[in-house]
Length: 311
Length: 257
Image (spheres, rainbow over the protein chains, first blue to last red):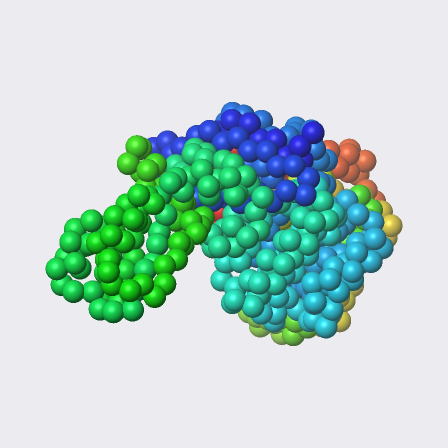
């Protein structure tokens, strides 16, 4: 049994007399200890999907199963869900970090004593022990976000939903959140992560799902996803020891080569095309040639472009 | 549920006293607002006038009105604010039902507000020289008023969930509440008498005036009717609240502004 099984979720709203389809067809599964990066442009339906899974929005059609139980019919299973929702405060600002942890612990079904004990452990783990007695509103954005994640973990849920957990954080705070996500997944919790920072998604996720206009357009293990969608074309950067003359530069440009300056070229294509480019450069001495690895960002943009052309 | 109640009481208390000036200011303003009205009325009536029983009746009405406004704001206004800030969605991400959580909140806020209102009452009694009776027989009529007040608060809370901005409705409702709690409907005659019994909180407020001011015994039939009215409005409020949570989840507007 998977920790999360969402099948054919559908949700539409009426807005200004018109029906808006927020989620058209979304199916997702996440196993214990797995991180699923749920990617998509703004307004694609990511947050609505997360709220459908968390029981905060009722689907028009489709089913959600968390550890085999439907949160819309059996709210008790929400004891297995923790969430940090984007655009929300997630915390009471007049309370201290420890008071928030204690309160939300009881709200998620823990005894007060257990909630306090786990709260102290989480504050230690998240490096917030020194701030345990100050009001949340006085904490930095990064600390508030770390505390929101800690609070979502207080009842040790099987499924953690993280909607843009690194949004608005500085580089250091984002790195901390990244390492926390790794630790949480290593502890066996399933994580659904949405983010616009694709480098983070690439490093953290075991699998990737891309949503566009309410429909999942691709879903696969992260590395397989990159290999599959990157295709056979690669990007090469070429550095020359001597200057490229005008005639050669013009011909190379007509083949799609980007002449960055007289010593540096950039080219995307197959290996056969690369040799053709190299023959044209011959006999100028080469200083360096390097193949750039395809990354999630390029593939994500490529997929969205394709989706827009088809849609 | 007991654990939830204590957690809510602790949260409410901490939020209440986080800024002591705000908390004490609320009590002082409410008290001196009444005293200003009292001094103004005495000036208009002239130096020889005696308010007597009427002053005591007004004190009961005003203090009940204050308590009910606290109750309504704690439920309805907080629902609106928490929906806007987003904590509402975190609160509802719980194995407890929304109705159970907000019932625990209602009990917690009542404990807190009751203490505030007793303080206000004691200060008013000291300032005006009003002498009220506090026999044990006031408990049941008081309970009927509180039940009605929570029913009313949950009805407005339901409106806050669905319509988001209800400040104007809350302001207008304060005048409505003043009418319901301060009007001596127990003195109405004929068919109006039955209307008075059916309005939320009025029957219980009338009985409280009987017990605390007029020092008459409780009328069994009126007590029964006031308790029934309290229970009916409370159940109505809870049913409306459960329904509105469902509608808000259907429309996806639990956390929207």
